[in-house]
Image 1 (cartoon, helix red, strand yellow):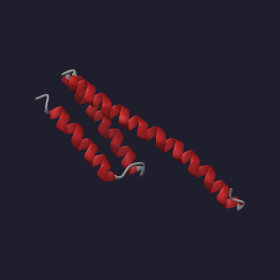
Image 2 (tube, helix red, strand yellow):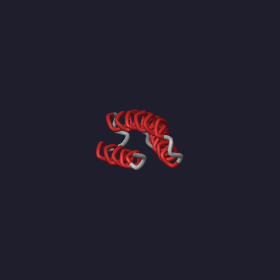
Image 3 (cartoon, rainbow, N blue to C red):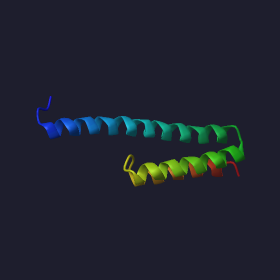
Length: 87
């Protein structure tokens, strides 16, 4: 346990950020899963809407440093490939 005042504060803020980042990463997994489910159901309109929403959230997470920008690009590419299978 830290006994320096500034380190105690830093530990508190880091914990808040960790919890917030965990929630965002969990939401990213959910929106990508929604894209997969829409593609499996052959619902083109729902899939396109899900891809748009997922891309936006991935970009936001990358901009805030929650995930790396290359990881966001790879995930967006993956869901784009999925939606292209619908034709």
